Amino acid sequence: LEQSGSGKSRARSASAGRLSEKLVRPVREIAAYTNTNGVRALYAGAVPLFCREFCYIAAITVVNPAVTKALESKAAAGSTTSREAWGVAGAFAVGASAGMVSAPFQTMSAMMKSETNRGVKLQTLLGPMFDKGLAHGVNRLFFGAATRSVRTGGAGILYYQYRKVFAERRPDAV
Image (cartoon, rainbow, N blue to C red; front, top):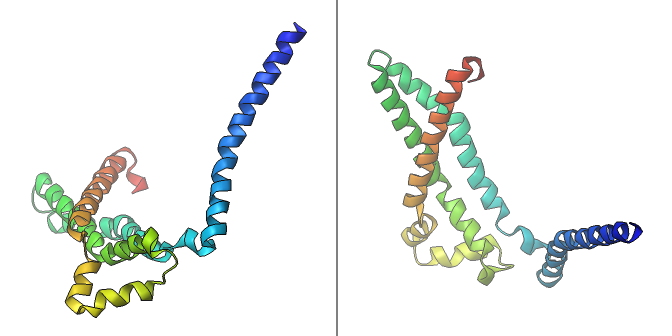
């Protein structure tokens, strides 16, 4: 019995060793990356990322409810289906607008996270884009904005529908 008990403790010790290695290894890799590239490389693109997320979160949680509620009240004389359609359209419009507004932030964040641009400041990245003209620079900043806007428009609709389902369960919560 004593041998089986010590065998169990060795198994637990080996298991704990594997677990601690799984936890320690990523920290070591981050430390090595920081030693090689500097601390600044860890948060490259963070400011544009935060700006993008602020646009998304503000649009979905603040603007979306206000717009959909206003559109539904305008369509109050119509049928329930009409009110729902106006609410969905408003939710999509808010989400899609957030996607368009946040497009330059997404582009800048992606550019700053690129390995080829490691350690390069934002002003240095924007310079060559706008050297080819204002139209070229703006087009580059809004690269991929249409697909992102459709996606965020869909997220606006999902949040609108979620609020509807949640409000039916707890009317005082929304």
